[in-house]
Image (cartoon, rainbow, N blue to C red; front, side):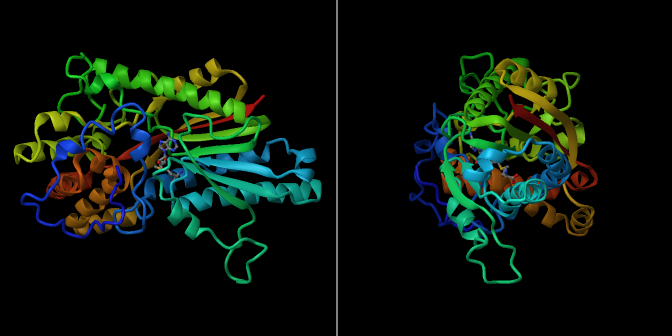
Length: 414
Ligand SMILES: C[S@@+](CC[C@H](N)C(=O)[O-])C[C@H]1O[C@@H](n2cnc3c(N)ncnc32)[C@H](O)[C@@H]1O
């Protein structure tokens, strides 16, 4: 199904009397095997509801992890022979589009380039592979690439010192030939699962997640179904990277996560304040319920939607790396990221309505493509409007602090 990416979020959907396509047309086709990968992506473009304009939390994750990534690159054994006759190849898996995407590759290329010049006296060629699901807005990404160093005549702009290519596909499958990559990074992406676990959408299953859009706070069976899917997915991810990364190459991952097994699986977000404010949790469930109460959807449609994301614990990630073999784990840390800056907080206290709008834009940026695949464009707009109203009307939220937990892990292919 083609998603209406071009539609501006600020545009009012056309009145629908008799014109709106039946939402049932949309439901249940995308959630089936392989369907999610046709629709999942961050919202493209650069309007207020785009990922490019709503990636403050992943940007904070990058800032927070930058010293760890730079240290990991500093301790990487340089590929001297290959560097002379061949290129150094770096992949960003789940790259999305926007400032973060370019900053990540730039950081890796620049620090490797400096090391080669200082330690080996030559500068190898670099190839950067921007990889994401086919529905990612690769056009915006390619348009935003700086001019190549060889072409740049603008003394002010920082030139691009790598050859760039896009690689469409799921990182849960093979994306590259064997022993192709020297460095693979995946930032704020691996908490997205390959699919919604079947059981949580199945009315007859004890894991049916009735009345909830996500796993946080759900019953044990739901949580177990998510955990099983997450385990399968991470195993596939690691098995593929084991083939693709050269010996001595590096895999650096940052993903939404939980600190450890002492924090139960159903408590995905760490604390009640984060739960209250997290865009996937309470207000999202309330917004779906509002659509139902207004008679715009039925229960089947509400319960046919679940957010395919899971926050792994450090133990779960470590166990998967050990199970896969072929990697030596060099670093594993849990970090907490504050939802937003102090200035933003002050701005929102002054203008609570702008808080609701900002949160709704964040939700649009991350969920709009899959919500539209489920509901179609008009009801999706209704859902996001309900979400915005819910958030704007609860001013107590403004005085709570929300944290996102991330796991940082770095492994060397041995
Ligand atoms: C929150 S964005 C993070 C983007 C970027 N790395 C950053 O740090 O800002 C997550 C990205 O992961 C991508 N993604 C999710 N599941 C994926 C999969 N199975 N294969 C490849 N990319 C995936 C999404 O499409 C999205 O672009």
